[in-house]
Length: 378
Ligand SMILES: CCCCC/C=C\C/C=C\CCCCCCCC(=O)SCCNC(=O)CCNC(=O)[C@H](O)C(C)(C)COP(=O)(O)OP(=O)(O)OC[C@H]1O[C@@H](n2cnc3c(N)ncnc32)[C@H](O)[C@@H]1OP(=O)(O)O
Ligand SMILES: CCCCCCCCCCCCCCCCCC(=O)OC[C@@H](O)COP(=O)(O)O
Image 1 (spheres, helix red, strand yellow):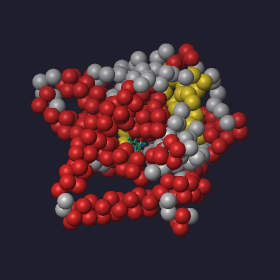
Image 2 (image 1 turned 135 degrees about the horizontal axis):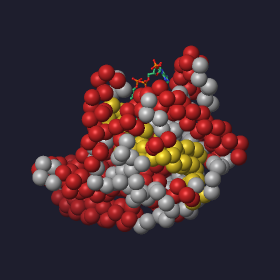
Image 3 (image 1 turned 180 degrees about the horizontal axis):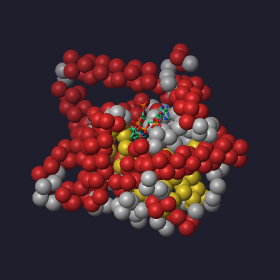
Image 4 (image 1 turned 90 degrees about the vertical axis):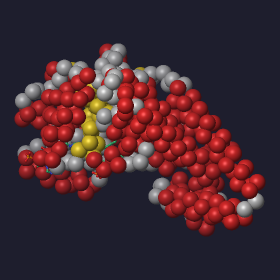
């Protein structure tokens, strides 16, 4: 293991990364609150500012994935579709199997300049997440409780609000409605059987209402549906903790552009159309499991430097006051304060180690032995 890889496993590095993300996130939240008085005066300007602030926070996780862990998403798509990416609004339909699927999605957004404005149909609970959930509120993310009677009015309203959005945006929809597990798969295939629908091997049965309502309300605003299928080589099971520990993954993302005009307007027809789309996606996954690749040529959109520059900028800016604080702490000479700080850091480290125990065993070994230096745990 090289020195750099060893460093990536160190608690101190993780502490700095998390500190930078949290503190910059809170500052972004604060700046977002400051845009509130601007909304009634110049709504479009307020939205644009929020997109930039959103980029400044979200791109840190893209930098973490691409530059820190070295993970490079391989994009498969028809070159004829490529020219549209980033130049139009789109609804993204993506499978929901992996812990870091949203991160790989963000990489795709970043490569085409829509990261700051990217949106998602997400469960309501996520809007309460400190930092990231609060940021999404200002980015006009669409949240649902997954109880249709309670959701329908606010869902439609949130979609209608996007009709005059000043920046190109991609709206992500996980039609499966939840992350894939074997148990959920079994239940949803029972539903498929009852409905007389073909069984899917790699997906849950899609929930169709959200897709239909999104398409109906975004017609004229959104130009296409991007059917995205994500998988990882060598049956990798990527985790966010793995990324933070600098583990490199190998994601493949297949994108197909489908003009919105080809999606039926009628609810029942739209629903059948979505089921058919998922049957096709399922076939792509099945083929991938045999061949290790998706159809279509690989395209390599340029990785811009901005995510990295932004991340380094925030880190430098925020490390300086931390350094001053530490110096002040030492100079204060207060044994009690120093001991309290050491106790706090030790507790944080112990908590972190417990969290690490969720990462796959083979990687846990290298983490524990080389990174955290607690051989007894392996
Ligand atoms: C690659 C590029 C990426 C670009 C990225 C861009 C932006 C990213 C930005 C941010 C990233 C953040 C990532 C955050 C991720 C957040 C993930 C989530 O929160 S997922 C959860 C929330 N989302 C959804 O739920 C969406 C999917 N659901 C729907 O759309 C639903 O339709 C609904 C709107 C919630 C309404 O659901 P409801 O159940 O009320 O209605 P439906 O008609 O859809 O379903 C009823 C129907 O379903 C049948 N049924 C019963 N059980 C099941 C089952 N297990 N599976 C399937 N179907 C089932 C039931 O019998 C009913 O049938 P019928 O109508 O015939 O009676
Ligand atoms: C410099 C970077 C700092 C490192 C930190 C990286 C931070 C990454 C940003 C965190 C963003 C959090 C996004 C949460 C996405 C969670 C996806 C999710 O939760 O999906 C839920 C669905 O599946 C439904 O779940 P169910 O309730 O059905 O089960």
